[in-house]
Image (cartoon, rainbow, N blue to C red):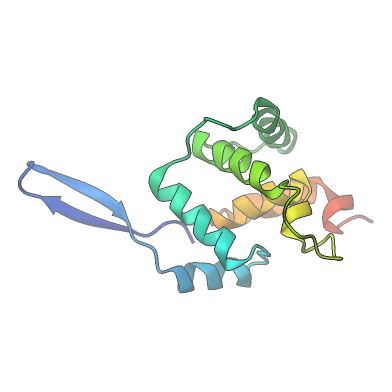
Length: 145
């Protein structure tokens, strides 16, 4: 899936810039088609974070360590941006002011750490890595024997 890029010439400045171009409906459809469960509002927030970057301010160090630990356990590499997005989403998804549903499998406000990172891999279009990651946690993703 990945992020589509449009190359724009900036003649006034004498250089060319790659600018991410998103078709929200298409990207969200592909994300959901591949098993994503986050609502469109959270997905849109993710795209905005991809485009503008995530600031480290307010992200708790344990969230960063958790993301890095899961990546190490599964043998995956995460970009700095993916780690920061995980930390940001972990922070806002643990908001006690949000309503929770009765289904812990689809309630985005109570996603486990592993499920949240799996969602980020899907949103990034890293389907093979998503498969590897979910296989490393069979009891969480229902792939146990």
